Image 1: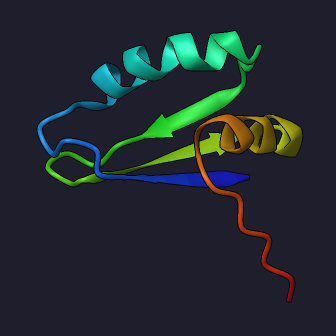
Image 2: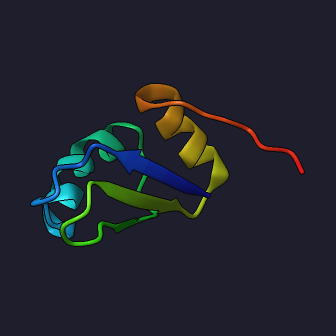
Image 3: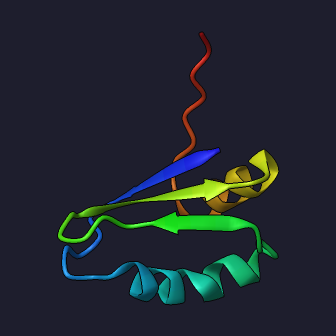
Length: 69
Protein backbone atom coordinates (compact mmCIF):
# COMPACT_ATOMS: atom_id res chain seq x y z
CA UNK A 1 0.00 0.00 0.00
CA UNK A 2 1.30 3.46 -0.88
CA UNK A 3 1.08 6.43 1.45
CA UNK A 4 1.74 9.92 0.13
CA UNK A 5 3.27 12.57 2.38
CA UNK A 6 2.96 16.24 1.50
CA UNK A 7 4.74 19.36 2.75
CA UNK A 8 8.13 17.65 2.95
CA UNK A 9 10.88 20.28 2.73
CA UNK A 10 12.13 20.36 -0.86
CA UNK A 11 15.75 20.34 0.31
CA UNK A 12 15.26 17.20 2.41
CA UNK A 13 16.89 14.13 0.93
CA UNK A 14 15.51 10.62 0.97
CA UNK A 15 18.05 9.68 3.66
CA UNK A 16 17.02 12.59 5.88
CA UNK A 17 13.36 11.62 5.55
CA UNK A 18 14.16 7.96 6.28
CA UNK A 19 16.07 8.94 9.44
CA UNK A 20 13.22 11.20 10.55
CA UNK A 21 10.61 8.48 10.05
CA UNK A 22 12.69 5.72 11.64
CA UNK A 23 11.69 6.49 15.23
CA UNK A 24 8.01 6.83 14.30
CA UNK A 25 7.99 3.57 12.36
CA UNK A 26 9.92 1.77 15.10
CA UNK A 27 7.41 2.92 17.70
CA UNK A 28 4.72 1.14 15.66
CA UNK A 29 6.91 -1.95 15.05
CA UNK A 30 6.96 -1.30 11.30
CA UNK A 31 10.10 -2.51 9.54
CA UNK A 32 9.07 -3.24 5.93
CA UNK A 33 8.62 0.13 4.23
CA UNK A 34 10.24 1.73 1.19
CA UNK A 35 10.78 5.50 1.17
CA UNK A 36 10.86 7.53 -2.05
CA UNK A 37 11.49 11.31 -2.00
CA UNK A 38 12.15 13.02 -5.36
CA UNK A 39 14.93 15.59 -5.14
CA UNK A 40 13.64 19.16 -5.03
CA UNK A 41 9.99 18.15 -4.57
CA UNK A 42 7.74 18.79 -1.57
CA UNK A 43 6.24 15.30 -1.35
CA UNK A 44 7.31 11.75 -0.62
CA UNK A 45 5.90 8.27 -1.00
CA UNK A 46 6.03 5.40 1.47
CA UNK A 47 5.32 1.91 0.19
CA UNK A 48 4.32 -0.55 2.90
CA UNK A 49 4.64 -4.29 2.39
CA UNK A 50 1.70 -4.87 4.73
CA UNK A 51 -1.63 -3.07 4.45
CA UNK A 52 -2.01 -3.45 8.21
CA UNK A 53 1.26 -1.55 8.74
CA UNK A 54 0.09 1.23 6.43
CA UNK A 55 -3.23 1.53 8.27
CA UNK A 56 -1.42 1.53 11.60
CA UNK A 57 0.84 4.35 10.37
CA UNK A 58 -2.08 6.38 9.00
CA UNK A 59 -4.18 5.89 12.14
CA UNK A 60 -1.36 7.44 14.17
CA UNK A 61 0.06 10.06 11.82
CA UNK A 62 -2.36 10.82 9.02
CA UNK A 63 -5.57 10.29 7.18
CA UNK A 64 -6.88 7.08 5.68
CA UNK A 65 -9.16 7.24 2.68
CA UNK A 66 -10.57 4.02 1.31
CA UNK A 67 -11.30 4.09 -2.41
CA UNK A 68 -13.53 1.35 -3.73
CA UNK A 69 -13.73 0.74 -7.47
